[in-house]
Image (cartoon, rainbow, N blue to C red; front, side, top):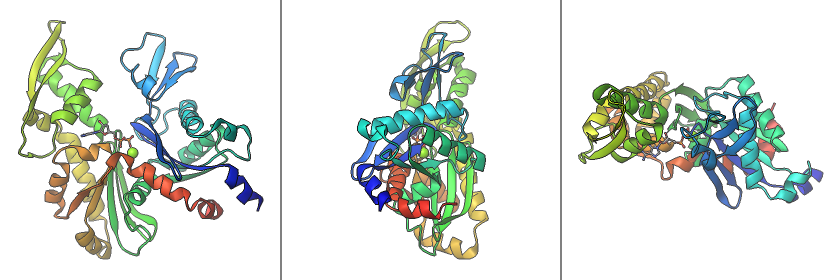
Length: 343
Ligand code: ADP
Ligand code: MG
C-alpha cells in the first residue's frame, strides 16, 4: 500500500548507459534525454566541469587542466566516481526537482549495462545509480534491452537474435524464453572504425586527423560492402612530415578497405554465436532472421554483408540509436515484478 503511494508521487525511468551516448526514457513521455557519455573533469581533482554534449565539445580542445573522459568507453566501468557523476546528471535532469528531495519519491531506475561486465561491475553501477539519487535500481544486459526495444518476442519459446553495435562494443545475443541463451561481446564498434580511418590516413598520406573528422568520414562515405553508391570527400588535417595543415580527397573504396578489420570482427562475432546455437534455435532464426540495432549498425552495407555471410535475413531496427533506451523504458512497466524477483 505504502509502496503504491510512493510510486504515485515518484517515477520510473530507463537509462541506456552507452559507451558513446546515454539516453533516458521516462514512462509516458518517451526519450527525454540523449547526450554523449562524456564527462569533463579538472585534472588531478576529479572535479566535474561538464557532462554530456557540453563535455563532448571539449574533447581534443581542452586546456591542460581539463580532461574530457568517456567513462564507459570500452564497455567496462573505467571509473566509478565519474560514472556516478554522469548518472547523477542524467537522473537529476530527467526528474522534477521536488521528486529528488525526499528518499520516498526519488525515481526507480532500470539501467542497461554491457553484457561483458562482471557481477562486481554490475553492483558498482547499481551503487552508482543509488548514490546518484535512485530509490531502487534494476540492471539489464544491453542486448536484452535492445531486443525488447525493437519488439522481438523475447518471452516466447523460440530463438531471436539481436546484434547491437555501438561505439565501444558489438554485442551479439540469442534470446529465448526471456533469457539470453548465447551472448558474445567484442570490442568492435564505431570507435574501432574511427581509429582505423585515423591510422589509414596516417599510413597512406601522412595525414593526421582527429576523432571527430574520422567519425565524419565514416558516416558520410564509409561502408562495409560495395553499395553501388561510391563517393568521395575532402578531408583536412595536419601533414605529419611538413607539419602544416593539408587537405586531400578520399574515396569510399579506400575507406571500405580501411574498415575491414572491425567489420570482420563483427561478422565473426555473429558467426561464432550462430556456431554455438542449438539446432532448434538455429531453425527459428532461419525464419526470423537477425535484427541490428545501435548507431554503428547504420554503417552502409553492413546488413547486406551480414546477410551474405550468414545466409539469414538481416533487418535494421527502425530507430537503431533508441533501441536500448526504449527497451529499458518498456521494462519499467514490469518494475514491481522485476524488483520483487531480484535476488
Ligand atoms: P553506444 O550504445 O555504445 O553508446 P550508440 O548506439 O549510441 O553507441 O552508437 C554510437 C556509434 O554509432 C558512434 O560510434 C557513431 O559514430 C556511430 N554512428 C552513428 N551514426 C552512424 C552512421 N550513420 N553510420 C555509421 N556509424 C554511425
Ligand atoms: Mg548502446
